[in-house]
Amino acid sequence: MELTKELLYDEIGKINDSDLGVTLTDLNAISSILINDTAVQISVNLIQPIQWIYADIKSEIKRKLDELAPDHIHEIFINEADTPNTGRQSLSGVKNIIAVASGKGGVGKSSIASNLAAGLSLSGAKVGIIDGDVYGPSQPTMYGVTEERLQVTTLPDGTQAALPIEQFGVKIASMGFVINRDEAAIVRGPMLAGYFSMLFEQVAWGDLDFLVFDLPPGTGDIQLTLTQKIPLTGAVIVTTPQEISLADVRRSITMFNRVKVDVIGIVENMSYFTPDDMPDKKYFIFGEGGGKKIAEEFDVNLLGQVPLNISMREGNDGGMPVILSKEGGKQKEVLKNITANVVKGVRQLNYAKSKISMPTIEL
Image (cartoon, rainbow, N blue to C red; front, side):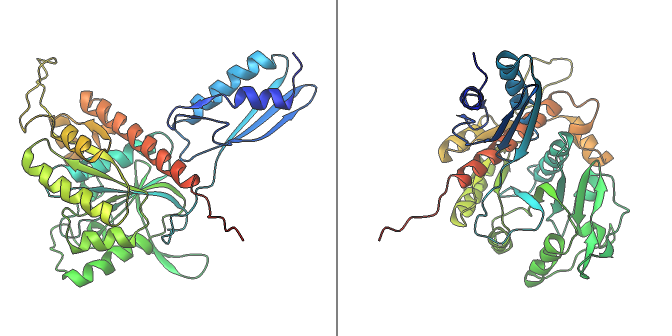
């Protein structure tokens, strides 16, 4: 069989992007194919973020080339395709902004946010996190950087910006780096927007694949203002299984729908408790199936169900997200799966944006 560009376009184009459920041909992902007497070079542009799908796609391309061009040297280049802007003002250098929200406090939203950011960083993504709780910032404690303070630097364009604190490969901005640990933030409602503007726009984030925004709990004026102002890629909503939490989740989803922010999915936290000496036993302390119920009601993804375990609390208090710990057990496994599901959801949203074409005008 003669080795031609047409053959390679056809065969490599059949490779499936498992996140999106479409082929490389459907994605128009093959940007170039070069063939000479000794080598084949393939360039592919994938919907971002690509860190999680990169190895699978490259392996599939390599397998095809081993079959079709066994005597050639293989050069495979995989890059990110451009993602169209949503129409909201974007944050320079930041590709995806994910809000982690809850309709009420006490459901473990900040714990999920810290582990999501750390989990994204684990796979090589460039990640930042904004601690949106002005009155009770918790990310400095969860990352073990409570004594740090934001420092101001002068950027190449002459403007000044704060340098985020970096820990475990995650860049962090929080009011906890501005006020003393035990000092109360006396801030009236109208002033909150200014504080969030500082954390969001006046921090030198640099290039990020993900910026995780740990939103303050609730669905009030400040949450509505933030979701309208910030160019969110999508939102992750955290709940517990109990019915009283589900009512707040409904309000959160309604709020995001109203401001046209896509809901990536639901995380059900504290889903069940399994004693270490009875690994097959599950105690549904806060009820059962609430996250699944609400996901089905609103036709959104259930990203995962995180069990209740002391390792999460120890990680939060000890300054290391449990997803990074050597132990962590079932919680760590579930949180890694949640991270992968969030990435899949973000890629699907970015793919949907890429399919939006400009309207044509017939004269």
